[in-house]
Image (cartoon, rainbow, N blue to C red; front, side):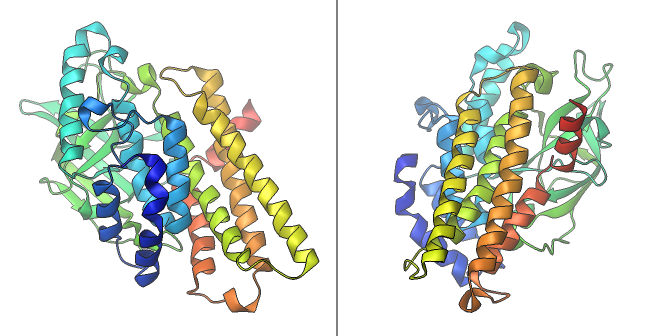
Length: 361
């Protein structure tokens, strides 16, 4: 199914969300997989549709209007597919064959319905890669990873985590300070703690994960991948689309039926203009994406994600305050969407880190 047809399945996803907003949305995840959404950025010969980052951003926002938790879960494999869609040419010549083989393997796993989930955040790191404490070391059998991660969305429902870890040059010549590694959630030495009890994003299963000398499936990409490809900005654009979708969802709810109050109509019109401005700002950053775009683009995405996340969440709160008594329920749709908007910005850094970086710049 082309991403342009995604709105056709959103009513069903919204119904599943309303049915049980606390439980992991397994049926909704399966619906997205059946529609080919997660692998859409991959080229057609690998099962995708060569979707751009802008296409992916629009898809995440659309899903967030129906289920913000599902949108967060989608953003991980969708972003990873976008990175693998870059093709073998982004790798240095000496690693190109291995990278091409990994692209084929990951694409085959997507087509088989495997779920790839990010397992990167650490307590106290604030989104800083340099503050990563998880380490990967090589022995006779390959790499093993040790450390603790938080907010591993999808939990035990995932077949593969991709996790950051520090590695030494003697174990991986040419490495960067931090590399991505694939780890199976059910591997020996991996413990998914089942401790998620979030304020928002209730159904994402964003548990703490402990690695204790756990074997890795593979190094993601090639040595110095993060510095050479600079993939994180792709994910940041997707994350910013989630609170945008939350605000759009609340605005849509308050606009149907159209309010009779002229003052309320003015407020909603103002909200729509603000939403459209934020969307245009995010789309501008998404259009400019390319691998190894450099520090100027990284700074642009940092500004965009920080601004859109903060302002969309602020708008969601303002709209909720306008919603009146019929929506003022703890377990109501608007209250859950507002909580998801706040939790989404908190779950996926950098926000405090971004503000510090912007001030320093």
